[in-house]
Amino acid sequence: MSQERVSLSKARQQWIGWQRILRVQRPGDLFFRGITLLFVLIVLGLVAGTAWILISNSLPTIRRFGFSFLTNKAFDPVHDVYGVLPAIFGTLMTSAFALIFAVPLGLGAAIFLVDFCPRSLRLVLAFLIDLLAAIPSVIYGLWGFLVLAPWLHNAGEPWLQQHLGFLPLFAGQPEGVGYLGAGIVLTMMILPLIISVSREVMLVTPIAQREALLALGATRWEVIRHAVLPFARVGILGGVILALGRALGETMAVTMIIGNQANEPSLSLFTPGYTLASVIANQFGEATPGLFLSAIIEAGLILFIITLITNILARWLIASLQRQAQGSRGGRP
Amino acid sequence: MSVPMPASSSSTLPSGESRLHPFLATRSSLNLRRRLVNALIVLFTTLAALFAAGLLIYLLCYVLSQGLRYINLDFFTQLPTPNGEPGGGMGEAFQGSLILIALASLMGVPLGLFTGIYLAEFGRGSFAQGVRFLVDVLNGIPTIIFGLLAWVLIVIPMQSFSGLAGGFALGMIMIPIVTRTSEDVLRLVPRELREASLALGATEARTILQIVLPAARNGIITGVVLAMARVAGETAPLLMTAFGTTFWNTDVTQPMDALPLRIFQFTLSPYQQQVNQAYAGAFVLIVLILLASLAVRLATGGFKQR
Image (cartoon, rainbow over all chains, first blue to last red; front, side, top):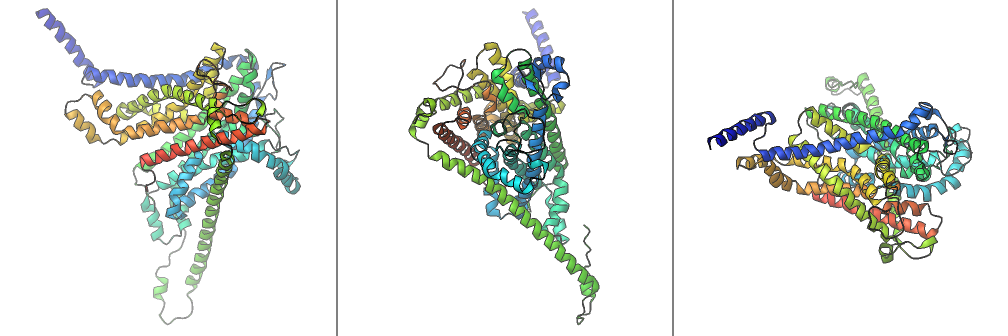
């Protein structure tokens, strides 16, 4: 009897010790915390596992080709020689095209939505933009393949060639599918994203700064130029990089319109090409174990690393803006 | 601001003075330039917004109006006809999408929800900050990477494309969406509610499960619906996992169809009948996502002025 009491109090003392360490009151709470932490660890494990699987499965081609995988032009299962230069070039080319057009358009539209738009239209447009950001990429791909590509082939590209054919950008045979079509579809896809991120960061500009400039007699553009943009600059940059990440990794819409040919990198926008994602989407079906399989996974690994870097950069920029905004209260005019 | 502010110049002029003050003259020309720049910017941003909205509305309306023409009951209940013969539908794609979304939710919702609870309730310090950052980054990884992951992990060892692999890939995509929305809505639950529950003697676990979670229920459901709508339209990760089929299939170890997958394959089809059905499929997909977005907006009161 007395021994049992002694052992009980010993266990109790141990428990009190654990309570101090873990700062919980009851075993049930500890259990619940443990469960949530377990799920967090599973998620972390899945992310780490993704990276590990990609790396370990692309080791055969990494060992065999090393850096020449990045500069090799052929993706040739017949001779077992693999390289992704055309895909990397196509990825960068189409994403750059999309940014060049989507950034000014998106920023302009966001400024309009925040500052110039009539109040009644503002909510409708904002909802529409958010909706368009949620439209699946296969829909853009469907439109690109069935409407845009034939139009480019018959009307758009011949017209460009006739009037601007002296530029290397518009040289070559109009084929409909190619960098130009992919770039246009990507522009339309990242436009809603750029608008909605820019709009959100511009809305957090401290209202006092806007009012101060208005009180000094500034025009509405001067308010934007000197109060809103300097404040939102970092966040907008973050949004643009986020959109870049989306464009770099977009698969379906691009695969459906880029033509999927491993051509020599060329400046002509009419050339059919590849992107990293479309190589994966097109080649996995024929993959045989060995170097072929490994080459596809290494293409995925390169894509993973590129988008990881762009996303980390974007999130870091947006987070630094949020920290900056915490002190001052945001608001709209 | 580089604009000179000669506030006193007009008041110092004698009231009968007709000659313009030289400084006043430069000010008015400066004002003209400023107003012109302002007007040009307003014009440019308006045009940009109209062009962007117009382009996207055109695309939406075009696909919707094309698709509407080919919608009928058979489209939802029949299998595709071989070689583009008239009739038929994509019933197996709806069936497959439902199964795939259910599988993905089975994986993504618990993982996302509990990670969200951890971040909102216990997540302090650099570890939680790191998890939060990683979840955000996970959200931006191209979805085909998760397809590749499921392909290597499940399809190649099992030597068969399967609904299971598709569900796994989609589940990975759901995790960050569910995590972030549940963390956000859990944080919105007032602290007083938690304190009242703890003061009545409820344990921390009981407080979270019976007080905080029910209070945040609508928000959490919103997050789950958003995540489901997102994966309902995903095609890339399904290419190499669920793969697609044109037959009814409820066996998750076999290739399984999905709506976006069928749209993709029929879009590239040489038969006009199948292209038409791709438009009809696109119509259904857009309407589903529109409804989900509207439901989410209504549930969160998003139409009220922020």
